[in-house]
Length: 228
Image (tube, rainbow, N blue to C red; front, side):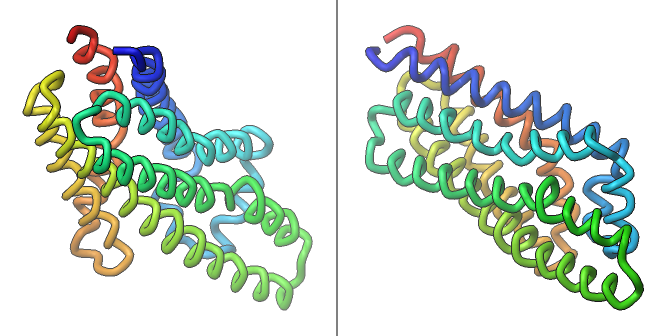
């Protein structure tokens, strides 16, 4: 397999992305009440963001760039499934779009929201009202629509197409592909949590399963294609 180094690099990217996601998510959950705080008002969120200092800002910056690790992982999956070139080309495009959308959505925290937090701390009541409107608008556009909905739907589409391709690839076990298809279905349902609270429970499960599945996929890319 001539592309074996690319496949291994893709698997390692998935593994690093999954483990780093758990680490940064745990830090934000413990120090910023993430993701529950996302529903809070500017008066609650911005002072707490600023109080976290440079460490909090750095954590959000790292978190924002983590989705980009999915791109080399998707490239590795592309070369690991030579029997499904057309399908995996579409999957690769979906992964790239989803990763960029999630990165764009998360990047608001260490950049625009950080600037809003600095301005909010020095503003009067009228200015704080305007800043709150900007804060909520950015959360709705960059957070809910771009980062969460578009990003997660595209990522689910990648998992779906990659899962189907793995099922048809003799180098991989069938269960791995079907697990990818099942996780994709859960992931796309959870993406509608901003439309209806009925699927919030599924979204919470997805937050726990995402790093696990990414690590499993990364290990599988390294392990299974090692022999013809």
